[in-house]
Length: 123
Image (cartoon, rainbow, N blue to C red; front, side, top):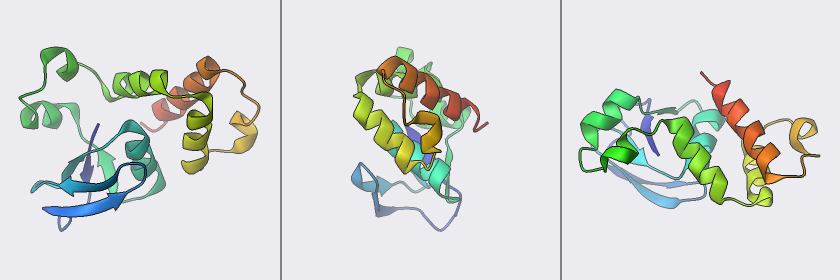
């Protein structure tokens, strides 16, 4: 999942980020990170934003057509499908979501729906 730095000075450097460790930021301030990392950086800081779909297509011309057509939400859904319930709860905790809302959720399906609902409310 690609995110972009809001600060124009954050370009062409390496940065240590949650979950993914050290990543390379390109000359346009764009970095490709895991969905978990993207949510943490975009929702937990004021320094990052999701890369707009148009920008993503213009930059990443080598991606298969099927993947190009996926929205950020669909990419998040795919990532959540691969995660355990515990990993999803850790994501919610690290994102700062109210534990009273998600703490008693007992299935992956419901936790995934909760995280997607939170993602949708970011827009």
